[in-house]
Length: 341
Image (cartoon, rainbow, N blue to C red; front, side, top):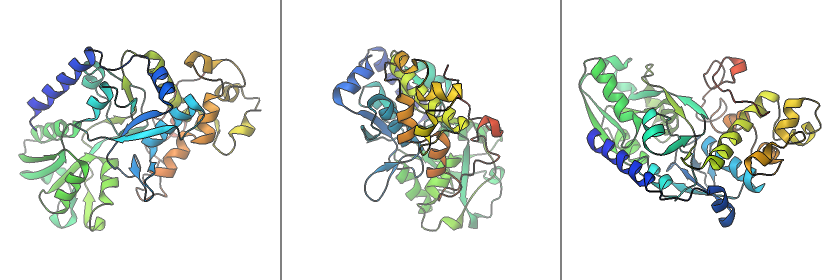
């Protein structure tokens, strides 16, 4: 897929959005059908992936469950649509899904030309490169002439081109639509390098025949703020998704968890009282019940609980928050939410 074609496809999506292909009253539509339709990946461990029983799990999945809890008081009132990177924006613009929560990078083009609104960031990432250890490479600057596997319809194509051009190196891009096709091609030796977000490399490495035989190079070549996306033109739904994520982050900062949320409702802390709906009418401003955030936290958990359960230090991905940009701002990271007040 050439970059010229990729940009043309994005423009076509923008035109479709401008034509008003989906209802602007998403909340009413969601309530009428009784569930939130969530666009997720086709299988990225830790972010959105089906377990052995067919249940969807991951930090992106938790965002959708949290929205369902806020709207219906039931985190299970959600259905999932697996989407490739190429088809994800079309599915959102057409109304096939209500939310796209699929390790999607917030960029200016997507925010201004595709009729999309990013509701926040639930994972700060950066693009990296993985190579077989046997290749004998320790730096991306040693990859002149390499063949590189990645996904079509992603920021990774443009980022890798920028990196190689800036460093005056040649490369061959080998792109596939489905993530599992990229993994299979790389594992079969069809390319020297696999490039995507570093969290994605940690996840997809688990699918390789011999994960220990591959290393992630030290260079981080881009900024990839990942988060949930909705259609422009529906501020009510946008606010619900944005403030649901904010509630999960604020809950962690305030020490409110799925295990103690009910008890914390009697707290004298004004911030906790506003979060859990025992003071003020903040749910009303969203078109929701006043205990919307209580439902989110008690059923899904706060941001830290979600992170540790799916991608944290004790999971196969081992993405330790300590010293990371994905730590709370109070611990030196970038995870920070606007206050509920």
